[in-house]
Length: 487
Ligand code: GLN
Image (cartoon, rainbow, N blue to C red; front, side, top):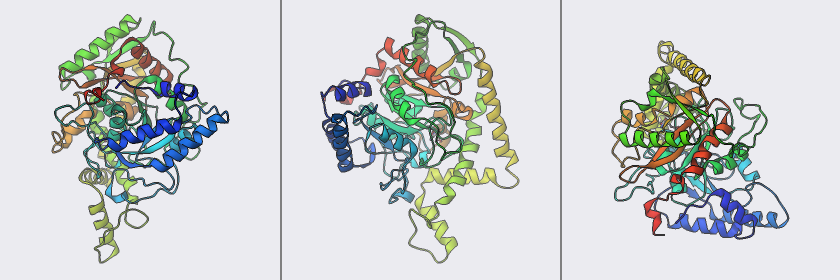
């Protein structure tokens, strides 16, 4: 089954080749018969009603940019009147009282929300094995069951499994780019502050960003046009003019300067991934780009700094889940203290509890300077490294992940092995930069390989152009998972 991009769907809708009701019904049927466990909730009635409305709007001459397009949202985004779980038992029966800005903007642009995608609990994880709602299967896993990556694993599996043409997700340390890499997709993390965090359940507030996962960079640009923009309800939202991210897509890459950070090609990187990345660099050279070896000397400290900063912020953000205001409450308690403790012990999963404990420790009196304050200094050094490299080059390129999609259970007992998945993605979040993962090949056992592209702050247009030009030249992004080929 060949892939169908958002761009193609929008053209079909516009030219009356398909109605939104037909398209929505088709995708809902695929979701209903799927065994990927990519969704936590599906909303067929509301989706079909919205699709019907979109068809009426089109008939009345509406020119909304994404009118009638079915998409899905990671279950971290609140939607008014809809269950929003964040992959956790503690929010299993939580109905959101308002809608996230990103979701509102995409609905205003005409999208139809089919449902909410599965994810690692509170977006903590790299395999989607930390979801209260069960593991998600990667459609590329053939004989053995492979993880889709995480934490936006359901969003990526849903797009790769052709259950929806595109999904939203989030990226705090790699959660859109790593699943995109594992599932053969395009994942674009915008600059910190580009997308409003209002209504997006907080994990690590200084790092969290909403992000799209799609088949192509062009599709990502179309979605980002309607996801980004200043929002006065998020104090970290950047106040700049809205951009048309499709504007520069077709500008040739002649003269582009690419930097290859040597820290992204060291120990732990699969040989096959290194090889496919080298092949991709050759494609860029053939398009007129020049390549230099560069260094991010402090990148080696990124993982350690992230695993202080992110848990510290998470421990504070997750304090609100206490059994009083909303969410799960334990049935067995004698007093308030016990109610808090039991609610949180029963409601949170193992990884979330581990992070809360690490974060609480890192922030505690006497340790704050040694851990949190120090990690913030490291963060500044990493950011400075990027700044100085971007004086010399236009884009940094490397692998997205050190390995391809691994099998279920193979890393669950070793948190550090799991954390190492994000070794190339995390430095970008610490510096607040935009970055993408695009597919650049297959391993010998038929698994997708992701290429990471990083550009300076707010240079999403350049990022998307560099990704799009590669996709014009190659066809890795058009491959479908073997499990779909017979369909
Ligand atoms: N895998 C990383 C973590 O577990 C990143 C998660 C994310 O980006 N939300 O923290």
